[in-house]
Length: 113
Length: 115
Image (cartoon, rainbow over all chains, first blue to last red; front, side):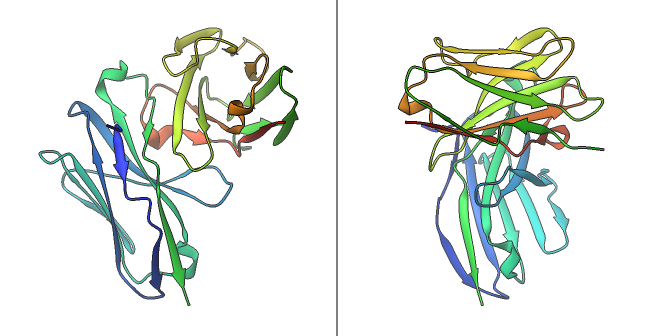
């Protein structure tokens, strides 16, 4: 079983749509959670951290459910520029707190005009 | 303030040759992480280094791969006797200290192609 699992998609949505991505992780001792964005053939860039209380940044909302080991990302009012691959990332506690990151395979989003 | 720099951006090697990938962390950062992204897959952690020390190499293949981060100069990821399966994008990230993703800044990557 993969440590971090995501539906690879692609998700094809029209501009203005609301889209949600989900992610599950297997290591219950995981400590920190993040969503990264990766454009085609570019480096990943941090989109937002994910907290149990939920957090929002403009059109983006992230949620963590520790009991279910489940992370979500909601994008409202999709823009063409949101087209990218969204990576679910976990930092496990048992890494000795070295900060190494465990990446999901990514979910591809295509926003159409 | 320049970001994380990696060179070369593209590298082509024939099977059996050596590949050297360089990473210069952001100014003031003394922690370097290397990740590999195979085609159609997610990034996989390889190694974590501080200046002159390998802290965690749990993701490194047992043979042919080595990494260093000398006191002066960039971090080097070295792959000896490359094989086709080594073709991938290799990303370096740096951070000012041990921490989570919020502090890791990624370079543009080196795309290695083995022919």
